[in-house]
Image (cartoon, rainbow, N blue to C red; front, side, top):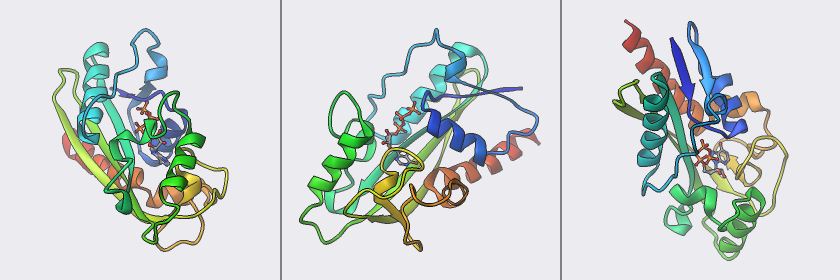
Length: 195
Ligand code: ITT
């Protein structure tokens, strides 16, 4: 059976491939379907965007599809940037501009707690979908540290660690992250489905 990972984010794709056990599945991604346009992520929630991405790819390809929509939720900012994490500093989207804006917004804040949230949507070829979620709590530090990972990783120190996700080995991030936690649930759901 084929499973399409509905992303064109190379970092995210590598993390999903490292975390999820795709045994017996032929794994493809949105990169294998250049003729299918990018899905416009105009939902108000991570759930809505994840479902839109998974269902669009599943229906256009006739295969099962898995989509991940993730965001950083900062408590002192009322949960922002949240679903708008990719475009936090406006267009064109840039990780560096987003991180700079986050540091500016938190300049006078003593509460720097935050969490990453991932919602994974799985869609069958007809567009019936299911979502599962994972959260990773941590804090936002005051300057960029590390070069691994992507997005807000150089500013995010997960709870129980002193290094950012961008300093930690990818093996550690892929064990404790929001994405790992969501994918563990997807793995259990998928195993049940195959029974
Ligand atoms: P796709 O929609 O193609 O999957 P995307 O880059 O648009 O890729 P998201 O909408 O899920 O991905 O993510 C929104 C932003 O959240 C993303 O641009 C990053 O800045 C940030 N982000 C997501 N996951 C992250 C992670 O694991 N570490 C750091 N930042 C992350």
